[in-house]
Image 1 (cartoon, one colour):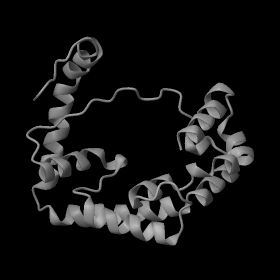
Image 2 (cartoon, helix red, strand yellow; image 1 turned 90 degrees about the horizontal axis):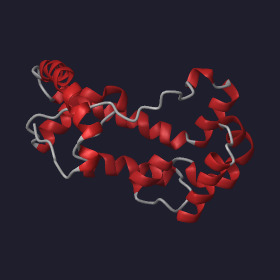
Image 3 (cartoon, helix red, strand yellow; image 1 turned 45 degrees about the vertical axis):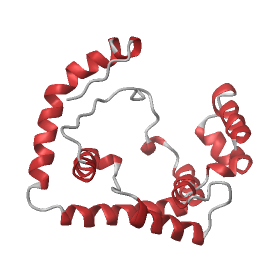
Length: 179
C-alpha cells in the first residue's frame, strides 16, 4: 500500500498532474483511491470494494462508531461528540485551510461524473451516514440546537486566542491547552 501511495504522491505532486489529467488518463493506475471511505470503514482496505464491502461499512457505522458526523455540519458533529464522549467544553479553530482549492463547480461535468462513478459506493455510504446523522439529531432532544448555538458563540470568542497560541506557542512547546 505504501509504495502505491508514494507513486500517487509523485504523480500528483512531483509531476504536477492536474485533476482532469489524473481522472481521465491515470486513475486506472491508482484504483486503490476508489471508494476509500467504504474500504476503510469496512475494514477491508486492500481489496477492490464491492456491495459486500459497502454492507460491512454500513454495519460498522451502526455498531462501532460512537458518533457519525458530517464535515458540512461540523458544529453539530462536535456537540454530538461532546455528549457521546463526555467532553467538557470543546472548541475548534480553522487552520491549514487550502486558500486556492479548485471549486467543484469549476470542474468539467464529465470529470465530476467520472469521480462519482469511481466512488459510487462512497456516495451511497455517505447518504447512509447522513440518514444516521439525522436520526441521531432527532434523538438528542429539544436543547440540542440551543447547545449548538451556544457552542458557535463560545467558539467565536475563544478561537482568536487559541489560533494565536496554535501558531506561535504550540509548535515550540509541549503545552496543551485545556478549556
